[in-house]
Image 1 (cartoon, rainbow, N blue to C red):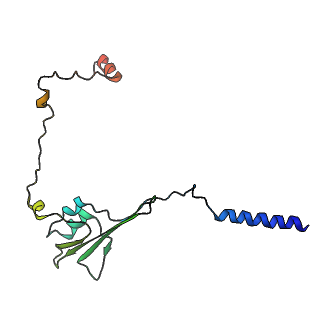
Image 2: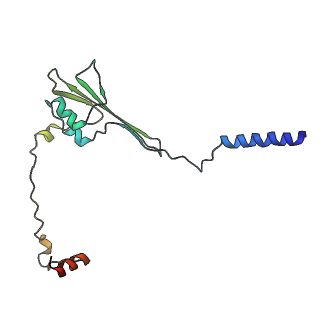
Image 3: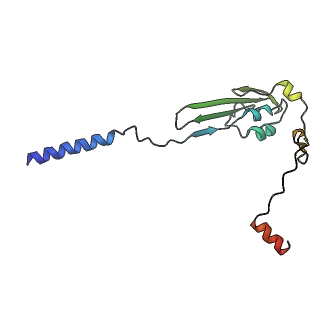
Length: 160
C-alpha cells in the first residue's frame, strides 16, 4: 500500500514541476503598446509663435498633461513599446503660452521649424498637365485606348 502512494506523490510532484517551466519554443504574443500623443516633425513644424491655444490644440491634439498650477504649459507625452523586441521609444514635448494665451515657446524631443521654413513662400496651387507627353516620347505613337470590359460591352450593345 505504501508503494502506490509514493508513486502517486512522485507523479504529482513531476506534474507540478512541469507546469512551472515553459519552453522558449512557445512564446506568447505581445502587442505593441502605444500611449500618448503621436507628434511628428510635420505637425510640430506647423507651430508658429503667436498662435492661440485653440490653434495649437487643433494641430497637436489635446495635451496629455494640462496642469492647473501651470495653466500656461501643456505637456505632450508619447511612449511606444514594441511587443516583439520590448524596445521602448518615448518622447516629451512641452508648449508654453504667454499671459494672453498665445504660443510663446516650445521645448522637447521634437524640433520646430527653422525661420527660413516659416518665411519661405508656400505654393498653394500646382498645375500638372496629365495630357501632354514627355519630351522623350514625342516620336512614339499614343498607346491604344483601353478595351472595354464585359459590362462596358453589354452597356454599349444596349445603347447606354
